[in-house]
Amino acid sequence: MPRRSKTPILTWSADTQLVAITLTLQPQADFQAPTHYATELHSWFLNQIRRIDPDLSAYLHDGQAEKAFSLSSLSGDTTSQERTLHFRRDRSYQWSIAALSESVCQGLQQWLTYPPEVMQLRSGNLTIQSWDISLPATTYETVWNTAIAQPKSEQSCLTFVTPTSFRKRSNHLPLPMPENVFHSYLRRWNHFASIAVDQAEFLDWINECVVILRHEIRSQKTQAGKQGSVTGFIGSVQFGLAPKAKSNPHYVQLFHALIACAPYFGTGHKVTFGLGQTQQGWFTGVALPRIDASAIVPPQNAAIALLQSSASNKDEVDREQADSISESGDQQSKLRSQSEQAAQAEQVGVKRDRQSSPRVGERSELTTNEAVRNQRQSELKTFFLSRKKRQGGERAEKAAELWAAILVGQEFGETLKEIAASLELPYETVKRYAGRAHQELERS
Image (tube, rainbow, N blue to C red):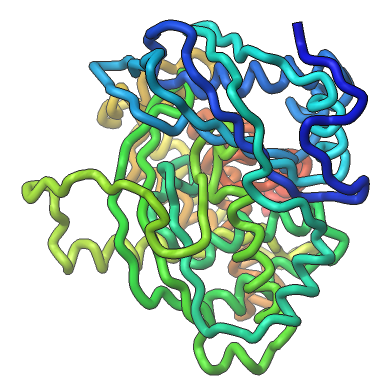
């Protein structure tokens, strides 16, 4: 039975919007868990919240575009064998929960008024030995004001404790590109903070002014769910600001505010399943995997990978309807012919690695030829650009690229929900853009 008290065992003010707590746990017996056991932690937490506030639990499960919490995996002494992890009864483990909104902070406070004594997972039970506030209770306004009040350092370090990755066109990007890192923070900031910022302009500033001064990272594969493994990176990165960054002090302030929020937010995707756990500072306890000399990427190949991954992942697009211009019947025929060729090529494409996540619709093997897909997307982008009244602007190019990515995803069997997840855009936004893109094709 849960302990009962008149006040929560941990307290913070009613206006708190950000806080993180850490539980120290000890297994009641040795047990084994699958490598995707983070799903058990996720389910246990939501069930705990459901008991005290069913509406809040439903909201946390599927009620918003950005999740209002992040969860760590169990940290401590574990051993792995094949696809299982071994937890020992003579060891202690830590597990952290971060709340990112006022409603979730209040929900945690209510939960801690009647805290459970045991964490009951499918794989095994753990006794809860202690509860601690691991990241101080604060508000977004306080973070913002602190960022402007403190002397501005020209550099900031972040340590990525658990595998960190970003979704990019249905693939995983295991690199700490500044645009992707700060895009993941900005999405949460704009969703939960009252100080909203224009995403496209800020990410342009990030690309122009934020650089990586040094890093020490390694790739690491992990299983974040039942659908397959994810390749991420762990280690430390030192970000710096170029001299021209000072010309926009507002964005400099936001840069430092987002750095401060990173440990609460987590970085990248699947932060509610233990990925992307982030700390401020350089190597605050993260253990890097041993280097396999045979797996070292030649410098020239690494440089190429970085350049290829620097394509824009913004969701700001041109919202103006493109003016219809006359197009020849030859162009229409050419596009339809290319679509038929792409469909034929997909039939004979090479089989994907069986570890990759299956598509919705019971497609257990991915047979998409990536070269054909990229070619088709390039053709559609060129077509949409030709339909734009203003073809030379960056916004028009980004809009054309996004429309092309959505249509290609549909052509290759992806649902709009999957496409929205891969582009890190709200479903309704992708649905609206898909409709515009189809209308433009029909006009041709």
